[in-house]
Image (tube, rainbow, N blue to C red; front, side):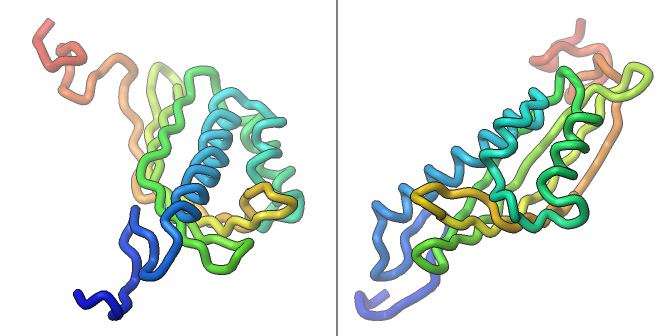
Length: 164
């Protein structure tokens, strides 16, 4: 592609004519916010969750306090939140949009494990030099409940897929 021709940035790239260092710094800062969210949910840590969202964040019904109440009520010991693909794009000097995939597991009822996967669609704002989420939408792509103790390779196999 000729040097003067512009195109949209792909995940992991700076926009044409953009600032790679600034883009990398933004990706690092927003990834840290998402890691704090995963930690906060997994450990029912209200303080960690409050660092993720601005107090006036639009999270749908209940806002930040509603989310914290939900996490406190429903998150169980043994929860594991995995943040996978994270793409963030600066829209204004103090605003960025992020698309982040997640997989979560949680001990369920009666000897089961609940799994879910989806995406967070976030709007981040930088206030006073700190990035946090100002709006979030969650899309759940799939959910499944499985008996506890069954490996992804099938019943009766260990973690490496070898028959017991």
